[in-house]
Amino acid sequence: MVLQIHGSPGSTCTRRVGVVCEELGIPYELVVVNLAKGEQKAPAFLEHQPFGVVPYIVDDDGYELYESRAVVRYLAAKYNSPLFPKPSDLQKWAKFEQAASIEQSNFDVYAAGLAAERVFRPAKGLAGDENVAQRHIEMLSAKLDAYDVILSKQRYLAGDEYTLADLFHLPYGALITKIGIDFLVDETKRPHVARCVINSVARGRPEDYLLTRSSPVDRWWKEISSRPAWQKVKDGLPLKSA
Image (cartoon, rainbow, N blue to C red):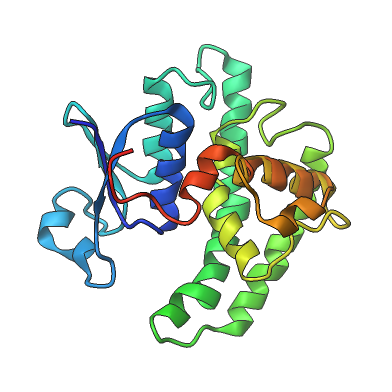
């Protein structure tokens, strides 16, 4: 039995787990959950993930876990990956947790909120609230100003080594970039963020326009988004075992 990821191929959180499996070379099988049919709300699914959202995993020994950030921490720790610093190196671990908190509190909340209004609600035939979307854009822009300060002093969000904290940004960073929000790829505004983003999203073949920029935020984004692991899952997880 290989690791099973119960999720939707293109969902942001499912791809967050998938990209870590690709980074670490972990064989996995995607067990597709049809979100359009509401399978994530079915009693059988809720037995494993009581909040009714994807994904959850079943490891090769039957161990189950949900919440994508918890899942990838578990996998990185299990496979002794430097993507997740060990608590025994207290200062490096603390810097990682600081960076992970930054992503969840200062990036994800606004990027996900923007995606809800510009992508997810329209996909369901509902009208997005453009006033809400604009507030998310304004807040995200302000937060990324702080990212640029951080990334002007170090290569990645937790220091000079690539970690899960950078990788956490990939699904929503790629999504908002795809719909025309250029905060991560405009080198003239935030060069350090852009450099780091490229490293994560592209580790393979980045979007052509991403490669034309170079600034803190822009260089960061180009670097992270160019990684081969992300390139394998950026358009969705494969439907067969990896």
